[in-house]
Amino acid sequence: MDPSELIEHYKHKHESDPMFSKGSSLFKHVPYLARVVKDHRVKTLLDYGCGKAFFWKWSYSNAILDTETLHKTMYDPAVKGRDILPKGRYDLVVCTDVLEHLHPADTNEVVKRLIRYTRRHLFCCIALTEAKKTFPDGTNLHTNIHTQQWWEELFEKEVNDYESKYGSYISYKLSFNDEVFT
Image 1 (cartoon, rainbow, N blue to C red):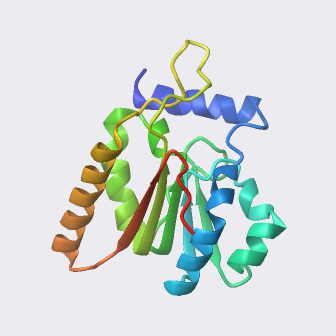
Image 2 (cartoon, rainbow, N blue to C red):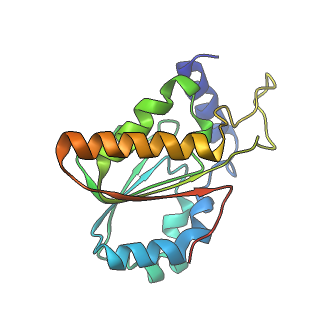
Image 3 (spheres, helix red, strand yellow):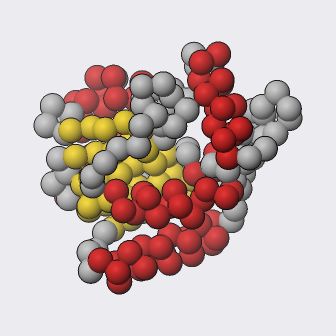
C-alpha cells in the first residue's frame, strides 16, 4: 500500500471507530511533560499525530500542564479538522504512538519536519513491535517497525544536521514501547 492509501485507511479507522486513536497514549507521560513545560518555559505545544486528542480535554492533563497558558496546536493527517499541516515553531513538540504508523517512505521527512517544528524540546514515543490490530487487508497497523538503535541513530543524525545547518540547539527525548520518564 502506498502512503496516500495508508492515510485513507487511517481516515476510515478514525471515522468508523470512535475508540480508535483517542490520543490517550500521552496520559502516562504527563509527569515528564509537566516537568518539560516548567523547565523549558513552554508556552506553545504541537501534538503531532494527535488522533482524536481526547487527552487534552481531560481535567487531569489540564491541571498538571496548566493548559490555560499553554497554546496547543493539534495535527493529524487522518482526522478531519486537524489535517492541515501547521506553520511555525513550537516550544514543545509531542509525537506519541505515531512514527510506527507511518509509511516507511515518509519516515525521514516526518522526522525532519518534527525537528523543524521544535523550538526547545521534542518528545517522541515509538513502538518497536507490531500492533494487535490490523487493517481489513491484514496489514498490521504498525507499518513502520525498526529497532531502538535505528530510531536513535536517525534522530541523532537529523538533529545534528539541523543544528549544524541552522545553529539552533534543540533537546529531545525518545521513549520506546511506552517507557515512562519521571
